[in-house]
Length: 209
Ligand code: PRP
Ligand code: URA
Image 1 (cartoon, rainbow, N blue to C red):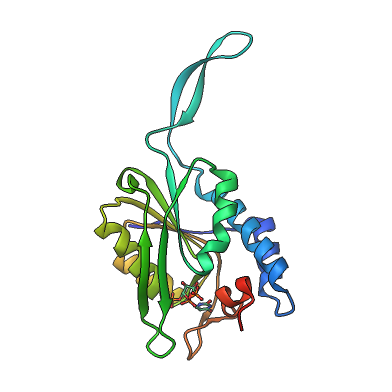
Image 2: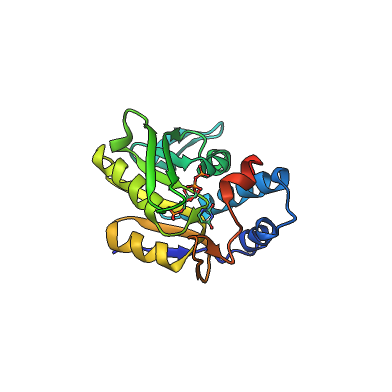
């Protein structure tokens, strides 16, 4: 069964309050999304496995720790997920980056796929899929299915704001994927937007509309 973790760190909550405000402009919105992603990455990587390695400091030999196995990959769902990549890479600079292009059809709310490019060795990596918004769950469910179809076995999903409807759909469809959430909101409105949410994340990051 998937683990669902809602972040309660005060810095994360404070910054989410800033991006929700309608008067926050694109520059500050982008900066905050990056900082929230960095803080969430720190929390979401707490349980990564470590192995002992023998090293030499300038003083003596010792047994130090390093991350076990093949390293990590970050896969943003375009467009809005791009805003989280730099924050993730600040914490895990050796991670490779893949991209999945999906947009929600405004009428049907179904995801439409238009791009997928992953690191060649993704199937050996722990993959963090990132997208600021989990609304109906259509986009994240489809993105994770695309990864699984390409042989990726270890997947985590990270979003900044989620609706209960999307969390339920993710848990039912991908029970093996842990979900990290910045804030869990009340519901979706008739247009599939999260309430209270923050509006359209892609438009607010890139200043479109
Ligand atoms: C937004 C958001 C998610 C999706 C969430 O992207 O970034 O990918 O909607 O909604 P869902 O859970 O109901 O699928 P959007 O489709 O607006 O595309 P964009 O990032 O290119 O603007
Ligand atoms: N996508 C967004 O950008 N915002 C929402 O509230 C729902 C989907």
